[in-house]
Length: 392
Image (cartoon, helix red, strand yellow):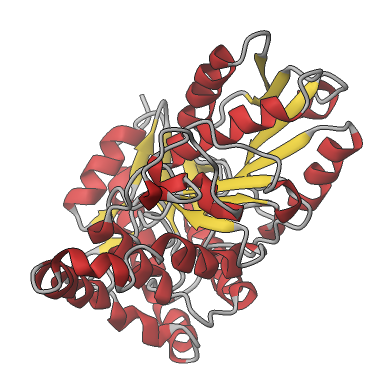
């Protein structure tokens, strides 16, 4: 296992060490839940103050013409750089759930002869719940959610859309994006990726993917309930229609005409008015990622994982996350029958992770603001706490 001295030596040479001071992490806290809610960037405090006092307070409605109206596309282009998409293929809008609904319905309408959405059983509940609702809105279509080891066989000539979450929310298992995109396309199906546990944490290259969604409040540090984003490949943009055809997605919203005419490109995927307090906070969070080498960042994540996994091994915890870095995201899960009690006790002791039913302790390894020393100290506290909760 890594010693404190070894951890401090790594921290002294860490190219990302400077970023830690840019986040408002409370003293005495080791924050291992950035995969659920990213830490607060200090710059966001000033951004929020300016948005409220100046942009809203002083400029009032004039701010719509001074950057607010352009925010969804502007911020979307910044996210595109993190996920291997073109700048004109991503827009920020609504929530992940709403965007999933839009894309699933659009995917089902793409080829009416194909009627099945294929997804993974045990996928994040929102994905499956929204898929159930979406197929209910398109007559004759169904959802087929199968275990991971049955996915390849489930994709066939009836499949309209394959819906996969790139990094699994419990185990951190990561799909080979290029291989599964090719598998879907070989069967004549479309593929939609959920990047909620990927963007800002692991290298992502959407490549030939048809569409994608993601949230803004995890590794992008956009704040609680931050707006989400969606990607539609340029080749589909002229043909696909947003089923939630709101005013902001109209080609000429200020013409105030009754009939709906979809906007150009990604603009048609807007529905409601952007929530600018949240939009500006999200942009501030994403700006913390500007210029980051994602391969180097994930290499640090892998080192943090190895350190905590070794400490878990030493006390007999079962690691449910893949050991091979290319097969996982940036969090680690341990199984224990008293996981909930242990996580609650850890939070009281200043190590903030989370619990996932029925028996998973999950710890986010956010390399932008976590140090190697954090992980060694967290491991020590985890060991002490697990000892307090013997297995029944």
